[in-house]
Image (cartoon, rainbow, N blue to C red; front, top):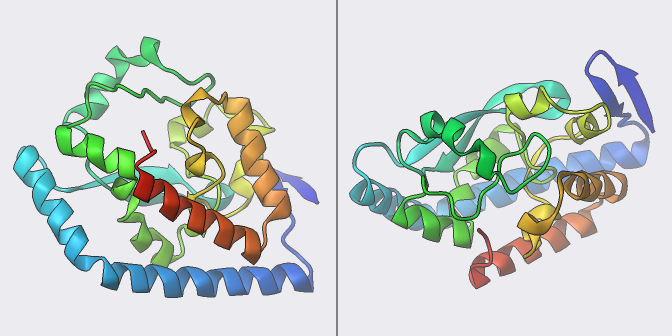
Length: 219
């Protein structure tokens, strides 16, 4: 069920089953993100060193403002995969956008560094977001958090994506053809998750994400 407020549609998270699910989902997020951060700490250090060696002009971590549940702004962490002036160069690439709507996506983005290309193919650049998950700003599974400039162009329908906590992975993230999908198809996938989400589905998407990372099918 949806309610309408000043920030658009929001899912009514009520009922005992829904509360139980959200409580268990949060517990799953905390346990898995903490275990992953500890187990992968040598990998995180190694990636950080490779990024700095490849492009010493900037640090290994890229922080960016993203929009979370119900429009809350938070700092999302990623391994830096682009040159340090990537944001300034974006305006020169807008005509090459491969996605319709407010989102900018480009498979052969010239701003991506050599190490960054590998990190994106394997989705290893997303690992620092485990910290966002641990902090409660994100979940392991949920719609990807958009940029404020993207949300400013959202339709009322697209704002439904903001009714739940954003995630590290989602239906769109595990699709090998994700760059072939339109913005409308992306939104439909997110809303399908929101309407059907449960722990079983969350586990399925987590395992599919691990498989996609091993295969290096990201872009």
